Amino acid sequence: MERPRQAVILAGGRGSRLRPITDSLPKPMIPFYGKPFLEYLVELLRAQGFERILLLLGYLPELVRSHFGDGRRWEMKIDYSVSDIEDETGRRLTKAGSKIDPMFLLMYCDNYWPMPFEKMWKAFLEKDPVGMLTVYRNWDKYTRDNVRLAEDGKVLTYDKERTASGLSGVDIGFAIFRRQVLDLLPEENVSFERVVYPKLVEKGQLAAFRTGHRYYSVSAPERLSLTEQFLKDRSSAVILDRDGVLNKKPSKAQYVRSWADWEWLPGAKEALRLFKEAGLKVILVSNQAGIARGK
Image (cartoon, rainbow, N blue to C red; front, side):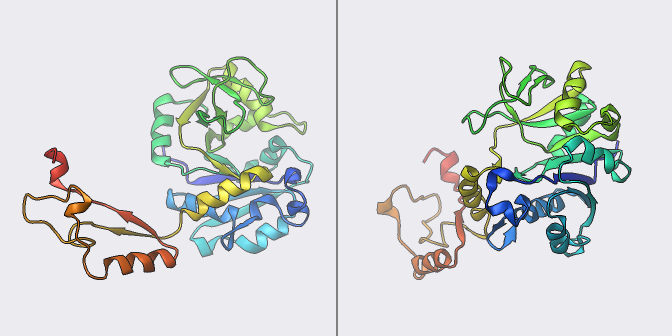
């Protein structure tokens, strides 16, 4: 079975919790370091081997379309399905059904998570479900739990209201689905998650990909500062070796074991200062054999 190359992103809501910011700006277009939040998702998808994006829009769609166009600037093909602002996620997906691939990745426009798609796809093939959610373990109680999982990774409960007992973990989007899930939607204007997920759970056809890595969001004002800091930390970096680059390299089979053994090379501290002033993250890598030898 060929891995999906299309991502479908739900991006049509008003973002009412973020007013007054969203009075004139859809929430996926909130800027961080000179580019909208949604652009970080586009770059993530390109890096993970996706070729096409379908944006399901409703609120202020022209602002999204004018920025992203057909996607060629990101070497992607971006298409759009625009429906009424009041449409729920289920109706947006139904209206876009003819544009959706037989296998696709479904995402929310307001969550960023450093997706390792090859691992996700391998898990999907092993479990062979109709759908697979990405579930954050939520050890830090970053948000309220809304799922309960079995040991084998099947979803036993999905509760959008988050009131059921025994919940542990939260669905963060980044879900792999077969297009046949759209057949489970009624004609009414309904939430895809609220209607379809329980039906898949009942049939034992909804799996989970667990992650301990926190996701970052623009869904509420209190989340913006954490998201801003995370995206800042994704800036350019310089990776340096240590011995012979920063400090004088010891003789063979000798190691720097304390500051008393350390001798800066000329210009090294000045270089580090310049990197820092340029806004670069400095990462130090050292593969000393002395570590393996217990020195």
